[in-house]
Amino acid sequence: MPTLTDRTVLLFYKEYELDKWLPGDRYLKRVVRPLYARLSGRRHRVSGFRVAYNALVEALRRGGYDVRANDYAAARRNPHHPVGLFGYPHLLEGWDLPNPAVLGPGLYDHPSLAPGLMEDERNRFYLVCSEWMRRMFARRYGESCVVWFNGIDAAKWQDTRGHAKDIDVLVYDKMYWDREGYEARMLNPILARIKAAGLRTHSLRYGYYEPDEYRDALSRSRSMLFLSANETQGIAYQEAMASNVPILAWDNGFWLDPRRADFEPEPVPASSVPYFSPECGERFRDFGEFEGAFERFWSRLDGYRPRGYVERELSMERSAELYMSYYTRAAAALVPA
Image (cartoon, rainbow, N blue to C red):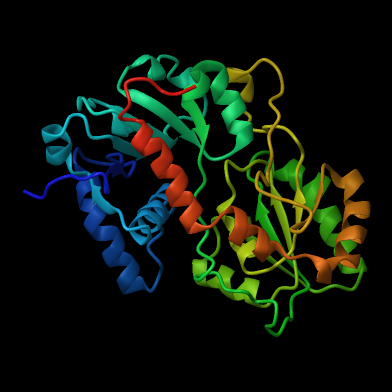
């Protein structure tokens, strides 16, 4: 049996699956879905958690770490070796391994869904992907709640600044709460304003495009309008920034999840672009601020350098180093203050 070393990382991840028609049919769907996608020519969709998990594995392996996925036997044989639990909360159901653990990102939308989670002495750190989420979770989980980010692969998302451009504004539409009201108050007036300026647009709605379509659109776009209520990290707009496409972002300032009132009596400060700086583009809070933000954005378009921000702040190397800083400390008896 291979020996675990300080370069061995034990990660655990499970997709969220439910039986739909018959007991156990989730196992059949694992086989049928990829086969159907292949025969029909449609892409087999991968969950956002799976994409993020794969990116973590890739970052760690590039850093020279021996990553082992779902190796329960190795973890049980080495009870003092830390483990990382990533993704959906059902991974914790029946969890009986004694190892010190790094939890997240993912798992829970709010700490009140698992208020006693970090009282378990095995659980040393709870990872979230942005500062606004850390503030929300830290009220319950304290200093064990820390920020970690998924790295953006700048080699995969190459600089498109020099490509031929036939799209002035790529509209990335990721609003699904109160869709009708959103279209009336925000989307349609913004599109009308951009059209009145004589600019060429192309719209992609979240969940209705293929990854290759997004990559192609980025290569052809001079800028991107990012319309999302909130983001825990915001991988899509960061991929655009890595491609050196400046971002004009709707950033309303609060967590707009309609379930918020179930968890928090007062509005929760949040962001749709939690990793951002003036070199990346501009932001606006509502349609009333859009006009001024758009004019500033378009007049400064050639001066933005979002790729530099990604390379400096969101690299795969930094992501791996940050994860490992928590992972190695997880084996300590106490979490340092």
